[in-house]
Image (cartoon, rainbow, N blue to C red; front, side):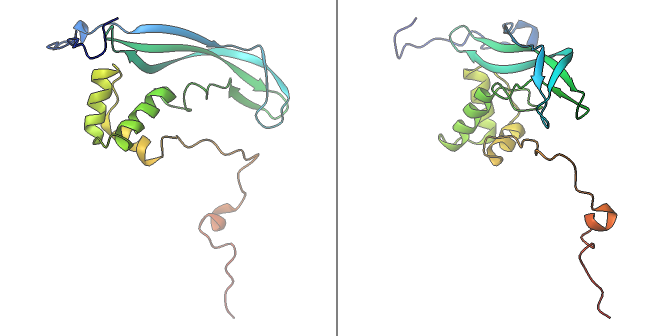
Length: 175
């Protein structure tokens, strides 16, 4: 390990082809469970299948390699409320996100605390942490406060009909 303050040249400086970049270090993690409680009713639900998800994580600046997490997770079916759901992965990443919570926190910290513009924050993440995030995505993360909107825990949607959606269900006509 180099002493503090020693300059280490960027091993990817001058690289023009994507094939010449260092390959990512792949870490495998599992969220494979045989039974999980249902999200609505709590009924113990059996595993219905397996799925795979790839997440981008902060890379190692010393080796210059990006890091990817391959996550194997179980999919379950609740026979009581007739709903499919996945094993909980929110400790690693938000639903639908391709990046881990560590990447989101680092990007938001660069913009908020360091005062960098979105594009410069994207370059800094790519250069120092070897994770490549578009600057528009960083802008969305910052505007959302670093959090992605979670699902509401409603048992059903409101049954307002067409008039209710337009806001006409409570209006009364004056006679």
